[in-house]
Length: 321
Image (cartoon, rainbow, N blue to C red):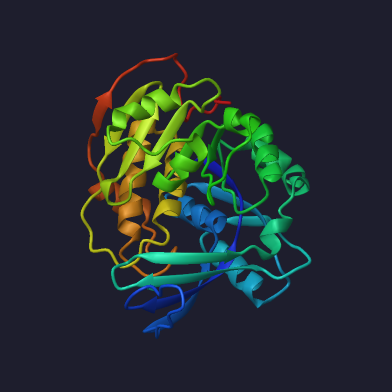
């Protein structure tokens, strides 16, 4: 079953260089290749969700420039509704992406018109957002906009707080599913991710926390904490070329599978698999897989490392607030 996913977020044109090593301060290195590719966390996550079979709408802002046209065309090709990807006064966002031969990357984001994705943009798309099974946000647009989207959501609200920053209590309490990498975990939740992943349940169990906290762990997969139960999902083994879009692939795939009605455990297994497969190609979106490819290689089960039940709330149902 296809579900409706609305992504409120950023869109950038990625300027991608490949170098043998990433430069240290004061060092100049020669690139071995250069490409300009669609990017931005919001756009990336929308693309990942669409390739996983969701009906996707994107709410954002672009400039009246060539980069904005490239991004609009890229989303449209994926079947994404761009009615609310409107032109604003300013240049389309850019990201300067450096990738080395070990597939590590460094990224600098120039916000451009992403800074103009205001709460008014949410108001304009309010009916669409309220009707969605899953709404996804990041922090490459203003926090006030993310909070407005959370308030408008009647389904599942997924937040990927990147770039990481401290979140207002009101926003954190409105989140259904919080997806953080290891750096974001420490910034948002106030402590490093524990060596014993079962201890994530202690942090997630604090008052005002989202019902579900997902920590993505790079090559180790992800730890999913829901109602006090922490489940570790391991990824398949792939030959890694570029990890730039892996986190966004995870978020988009997770949103798509929740919108389709899958339970959290299965949705997380598919998301981990999709993220792993996405690293086989250069660029944030080029390697994002289709759903049939993900289902073929996704693991049948995951490992629960602790169980501390707290309540009966279910993630991913159409009626979830």
